[in-house]
Length: 153
Image (cartoon, rainbow, N blue to C red; front, top):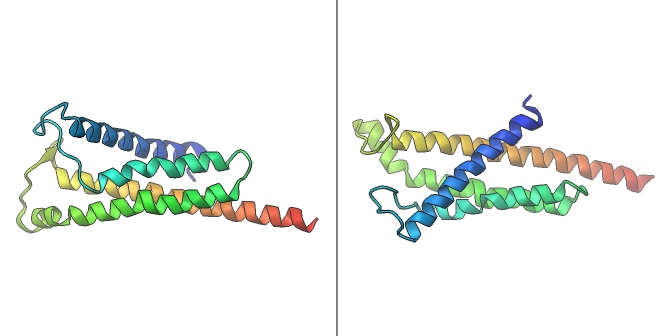
């Protein structure tokens, strides 16, 4: 349905978000700009920076059909991609609940409440990382059956 280019561009978008997040963490930690200009990162954003690791292992697995790198990629995608996003969703839940119950939003991004935009980005990121795990599993199954066929011959 999406092909190589669709999945690659979605993964590229998620890594661009990761790059922006790294810039936010760097600026915040080095006090380059006041916190009124750049918000301090949330706790879940630090481990999410490691979400580049599963992609690196995936790219290392491709040239020689290395099953072990692909398995490491799938496990680390759950740990460094999905888990921080779930934690971040739980961390932002009281703000989202306040917006839903009382209609009060204190921060805005392009005219929309910031918590709504953050949840939208989180949902897209979870979907992309979920596809990453799903297609890695499909590729793992294909590689495994092809190695079993080679052993039978």
